[in-house]
Image (tube, helix red, strand yellow):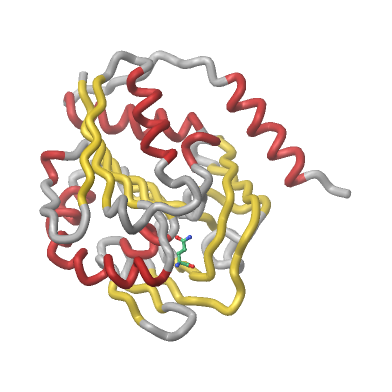
Length: 242
Ligand code: GLN
């Protein structure tokens, strides 16, 4: 089997180790003898739905988001088709914000988003920085990560990636972090999300393979004892009552 992973704007949107998400997907796929090809797509490049099995859209500063926003418009229809066709996409922070209607920076500049997901982001006065722990009820999984954003995202009726146990999440108000729409997963977690949460990495791989090969494909488990021990340590440290 083979997987094509497309990295959107790797030269502009790639902060706090977000690239690690691609490295983890590649590593975990190769451990199952799946061949992985990585394609970079940036300014003025064409986005072709059939070339990608997993798309990664990382985080970035407001300045870089301002460069990416106008370029996205020429890719909008293809990315929308990709998402609506249940294909797998992972978006972090700045990329997450740009899938929505708009992101208004703290200085008041309104950056147009792709308007594919029914969400929007307002720049706030506070930067939400720190370690975060969330719980996803549907999968009964706990995810840990590190957030650093001033944007406050409101996801309306979309499903959250998880409920906040520790940290700020989407906006510091409603107790939600990230969102899920079809096979599009969004989060504010840097650091990177998938290295700390291997079960989520496998969910993306399995969904991408099942789409591509038109049958449900489950993956052989890997030895994640070190990752899970590290996660348990973080959960205990971050949620321990003094
Ligand atoms: N510029 C955005 C914000 O501060 C996104 C930051 C990021 O991707 N880390 O909200």
